Length: 383
Ligand SMILES: NC(=O)c1ccc[n+]([C@@H]2O[C@H](COP(=O)([O-])OP(=O)(O)OC[C@H]3O[C@@H](n4cnc5c(N)ncnc54)[C@H](O)[C@@H]3O)[C@@H](O)[C@H]2O)c1
Image: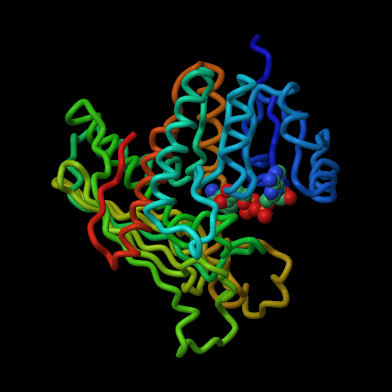
């Protein structure tokens, strides 16, 4: 019998929790956790019976796979450290970005820096021969996987895709700060539907033409709607964005001339609003991520359900609620982590890999360049 893959988790917050909850039941041994704050890593370790490490460096010798669930600005250094130590990596979205203030650096400079960094990451991962799983859960959502199967088996040509992820603002206190997040809605939320559409076009290309279809150019706009002088704050939307956009749209042109339109915002009430819709030459599919209409619950008074978790980012548990009983399944977390563990054990590429992560990152930063030019079409760089 093969020995289990020893996992160390970096980060002790929201993503660390759902990673831990969705890991496969066999073939893995979660060794320990580290995070920037002693209090958070100790609480997390005590809750889940894990060892506490003071740093990633201290944890690396004891593990086979580093699971990076820390804020985006730390992803690059942790990937490079794991690669240097010859350890596999799972990294939360976004892969990486540019973490200097937009007041000091223009977007072309950011894009050039991100291209260079992507090259460094690619070299480090290839030379180390490790598995890197890019934790884009949309790729693994059952609806997107069903659509992949339809596209591959019917050799469909996808002509147009539409996708969105929006809600009323992140829970994280460090959200809205470019130097930690590397951008606003486009990178933090838009990366999810963008990841799914780039994945589906890759799969279509491989099935029909023998090579992936990739993003070639992008036009984008970004806005800070909660900062416009006439915005009337009724207290339902988060408004504390330091230097990032709260609304963004990306129009992607693929190298075969087909298109995708992505919207991402912090301006949507009523829970997470996320979907991908596919318009192909032989079918049309609506992929719902959350909620997925498994069960609707009616609660006449919020108070009686105040301690119940029903669905992500809904601000009240009163009235009809589209409850999400199994988000690990509907949002793809379980399938994602099973694929990464299987890929690390078998020495194969995962479905959501570094190549996809790099295309997503470069498309978004080309989008930021375009948005600075009020939507002018901008080429997506290739490594
Ligand atoms: N796939 C998804 O649906 C999804 C959802 C939420 C967050 N995320 C991603 O997960 C990552 C973490 O987000 P979160 O919501 O869990 O944040 P969080 O604020 O809840 O938790 C972050 C954790 O990382 C620790 N930390 C901060 N800086 C660190 C550093 N330099 N080194 C080590 N530990 C550090 C913090 O102490 C905290 O424990 C982000 O990349 C985010 O984009 C993904």
